[in-house]
Image 1 (cartoon, rainbow, N blue to C red):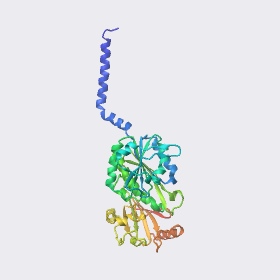
Image 2: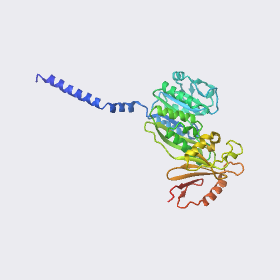
Image 3: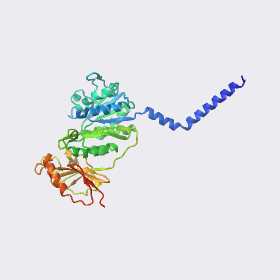
Image 4: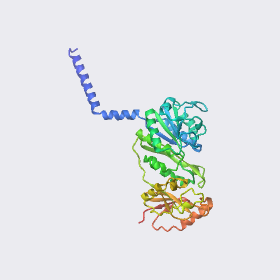
Length: 398
């Protein structure tokens, strides 16, 4: 055996180590990026309905998320439907007794949040109680921080709550926002309202979220804030439907549902514009809308429409039919038109009103009015299609 073998071996191993350290030094960013992807949470925020008509779909979404994340704590955010309790934002440290298990509160984190607690206020809140079993099934080892928010909450209060949640729950926490979307509208109108809500979520637009026709814009505001804080800016829309579609009742009052989550990825902005148009909207008998709203504005001028909405919050906010669009316009008597404008087409939803009560018509009476409108369309060089209450018009004029 050669006497210099140990020296050769040591020199060889030293060379290997030098090469290894050199590779690491030159590829530091690569290793850190891999490390971040391994140890960061791919999904930060989930939005699901509390309406039990879609309980199976909700459970499936949560089960799919549970494959990707394993949170120690679930932050469950709900509207305060009955405006109970003495504070705008409430939580509770109660232990929830479920069918086959207990759902324990994360008491230590709740204490650090310094939110007012009120066990009794949560007793009837279905935005919380309807989600407990599904969440326990999906995340059996997690504890829970329930949060209930009243409709008159201010943005500054939500900003502070978001900041405190980030401090108390810096990792291994999943926010679940329990929100039902459009209410009391025919299915096709609900679809228009949901377009704006989905746009606000996709664009991470905390200002636009206040215009949405949902049962808790505040919960969605918090969802956007939480997603931004965790660098999960891509909103994945899993499904959007409503009870009118599911129950084959297109003219009935419906509740709409959005299933989605924020995950790692760049923001995917949407740029379509939605609208609601009607005539003499101030003369609806119950006076829920402001008087004197006979302003006529160019349908294509979304800026002017937005200004009208921001100037007349009483006009925009008091009747759910007129929540949820980007802008409004005063046009035909006895007919409300809502829809979406894209680069290629207008999608119009026709809602004829009773001439005296201004209540939307239904069934055959509605169909008769819409057929007359269709027959009177004079739009040469345009393609018109759609179902009986929706008209899709190609915007290309040549």
